[in-house]
Image (cartoon, rainbow, N blue to C red; front, side, top):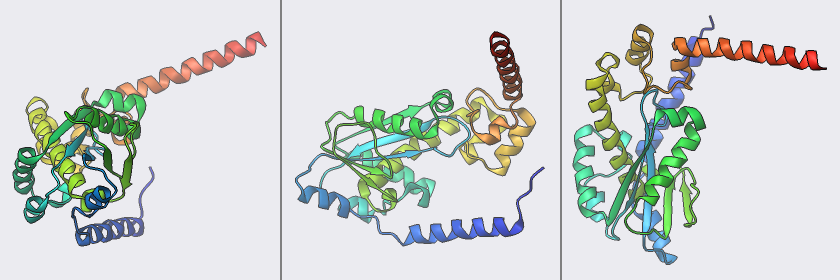
Length: 253
């Protein structure tokens, strides 16, 4: 069995810590929105996703169109949802919903993720969120991605730490998905979903080893595939089928 060296683990942890320090130094403001307004755009939708790296459940995206004056959200400390406490996120979620011109949340389930891959599923969720808005946006501010939409788009890396509109979408999406994970924890209590929200924590990995995956796990993700007896059987059957086809082709030739 392959092992990971302590040096490699230390480097990985060091890079992750450095990235977290960098993100905390970024200032979340309405500067991207104001730059777009200077160009004549008015209905600017911030778009973001959560759950892309989870092993369980859907990827969730939100699209939010906010009014021009975002001072109240800035004063309230709106920023990347991952940098906030649950209490602050939920309070800001209510504030965002109260002042947004419109917002929309969309999910793409684990079965679809396994079928099309997580990148495409994320784009599908983002597009569905934009299409679900009650008003038509004239520009999309998206965290690091583009979607198949005719509307002009700005792909902003670390957007949820730089743009209040994207941060608002991040908060709405995360509060929605975290709530869903707490509900699903009541249905699947053996996995501990309420605490880790479906991500690949040591607790979740141990539960997968003990209980195996359920129908809401993403079977195309390596930690799930590795403990899925159905995946092993599928791999065996696929291998046998390929062998039979090769034999048939050889016989015809």
